[in-house]
Image 1 (tube, rainbow, N blue to C red):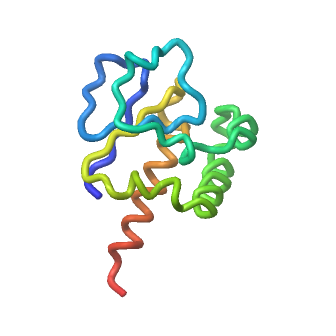
Image 2 (cartoon, rainbow, N blue to C red):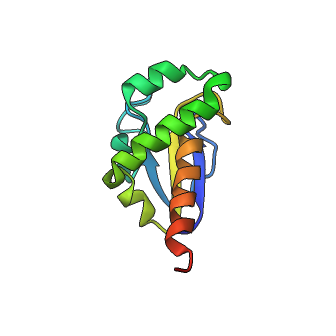
Length: 121
């Protein structure tokens, strides 16, 4: 796996490289399906609706959100398999918070999976 970039779907001036995957369970509000250029919609790699509602973008819940989200991803490894095979990847998200969102957590999870896979045995 090469680089993993993050880009907010509402930032049209944000330079985006590589294959682009929307990593939201719900389609972003106000964004036309024909206007967002994506290579895939990895909605199964997004947090469950229950977890997303529980988190509510509350930074005080960030550490616990990440733990629960990683547990969900561990239980559904097929959801991230297409993302792990990309050399140059951009994860698209819709949250206003650029530091505490599922794309940030997913990027960290993918990097950890790749490091684990590449570690000598």
